[in-house]
Length: 460
Image 1 (cartoon, one colour):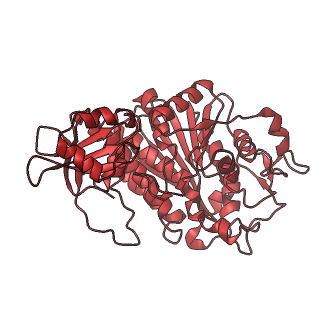
Image 2: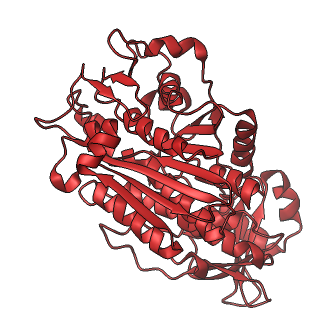
């Protein structure tokens, strides 16, 4: 993991190169106030004030220079100077005007590399100075959590199965003196039959399990974090196409988000009793695979007609949400790479938020906007509840027709959450199909900063 703490430092007037960040609307004004050599350098680099324009500016001494970036990002954006974080030579830098603030996060994340499978080009640290040293620790924590989500999602399924997710949570527990309980084998089949059914076709080494971590003072408000941990999804007997399977190493992205969020909570010592729950499975194909038409009994006692083995995530979450609710938390958050319908509706960057609580909805949307980690609320539309009807069981897991797929998946999950517990479900993609400054192609933390903002405001 990148040492993010080495990339930020308190500004005590130490030598540093200057970064000029100029908004396009102020470019002409800024340029008019510069010396002739600066204007010449700007002209030579064909900088005309468009967003993304940049140039190296000469200084007074032969080896002195500064950086110009034309940027139309808001000063509150973490990605404002992220394009420079991995593009400048190693060294120490400060902004010519103002404090970097939220931009420290993008600066750090731009220098993170996923290096498990290939060696990264050697590079020294680019250190950003700030006159707000009190923001460094929080920024480093969020950068590390974001990088953890990326690294877990980018790891191939051959190296990240249910056992490896369990090991990740064990390591987190040791760091923060938390306790871990794992249910597997015969006990899982009895206590969590839908989790067992989804994972029963996998090999012994990749057997399904429910992993629970608890931390904090039992007298503090209890919150539950639930993350979908499908370490690989073949689709089961309703097998995906090869193209559909290509990225299914990322189907544990919900678990990655909740593991990272749990680390943030414990690292900041929020005043909560934390309950992290990760159902970890592989949806494989073998003679013991669960079948279309099977009727599954859930931990809640509801029966579910399995109409699609590729709608497995909601099954394992149903049992897990039931377990979380048994401890009567005041808040349940679940994150899951649950539906392609969410991507069709909102694209890869904007996760839909479903919640049964208006205050929680407002907090999530506000926190997402503040952190430039947006979500979009979709409805738990009661009129579509009839789509979950079954002729032989209490409900189906996947309605016919494909209408409102993200909504009906959320309605399925709602069946397992008591009405008097505040609950939010985020259908995150956990993947970035194209790179942006500070955000490489691959695993992505989408909705993590928003959730952290909600919890920090409520319990910080």
